[in-house]
Length: 188
Image (cartoon, helix red, strand yellow):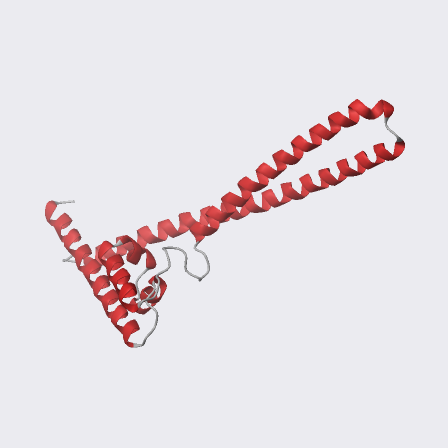
């Protein structure tokens, strides 16, 4: 890219950013006028900009934070709104649940190993009732391990789906940014 084109692209991006900031200012004014709580999701909807822009842009963030302070409402932390969690939050939740499931499976396997060792140690002098109780407990633990393995598989599939959604969203954002850059450059 030539320096002139680079400068033109930077100028176009600055204009777009300033336009989004103006939309956010107008949205904050509108929300205050209508006595609606000023929150990141509300400003994003009213301004027609993404929440990511509002969280990432320091000017937009300070605009919303000052509006929230002026209005007396508490702004939710980024990503903590009451809407459906984003794909990133769902992926992180799935990873955490998968990690917990693996830890539970490992704990159950250790417990089974201990119990099986106790059964072998006591097999020669166990009463039939005690042996039956241990067999029943062992069967219950095996069922629990199978259940946790199935849950782990489900969580793994959800994680894979969330990662796939993330890759798609990243590609789509890149395409949209490229289209914006093409439309913003003079001479096209």
